[in-house]
Image (tube, rainbow, N blue to C red; front, side, top):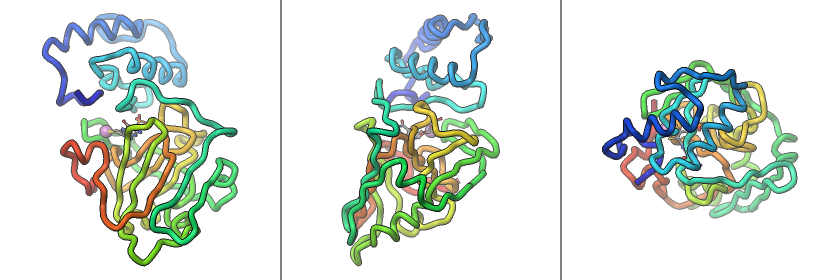
Length: 231
Ligand SMILES: Nc1nc2c(c(=O)[nH]1)N[C@H]1C(S)=C(S)[C@@H](COP(=O)(O)O)O[C@H]1N2
Ligand SMILES: [Mo]
């Protein structure tokens, strides 16, 4: 069963939900009984998800309005010393970028509403990072390239875009979200941000970009989501 998709909740979800609320230290009303800092809260939700075979942790909003999503139980942490982004496939100059490399490139800022297909929305979220179009120019897309396939260091999630979509100025390889470095829970240190599309297109824990001849449907797209996730 895919995790964290309310459409796939098992029967008996209310009991499981109570169990989960208990794990999180919430009362039956769902009220928070202790004051958590936002980052502490996100870490807690992520941890609860990892121990939560029902995927119900994804249903709990954190105070900022986001929900934690991962299709796998645990994701390695990567940072300054071990993070790399590889660009390959049908390109003239395959590249490997470190965090420092990405930070040294011109940064763009996009502020839009984030929306998940599950119905939640967070208004006016600032994202900053390198325009994907700049990275593609750096690598030199080959003549037969038509689309991109994105890989994640969670080892499972994938996403796709056509080249035309990827070259929009509101599509970022994001390093910052909400005016701070992207947290691990939100897919840091680097996630994709596709502002004009539903948030499932914004792959977290981005590790690889491959130029392909045609669109290769991503993780959720192989499970029924639209390849074009326009809002
Ligand atoms: N690697 C990875 N990226 C992902 C997902 C995921 O499960 N794994 N979920 C997607 C979905 S459906 C949403 S709504 C957002 C959630 O981002 P958040 O956890 O920062 O709220 O990430 C998207 N990117
Ligand atoms: Mo989503």
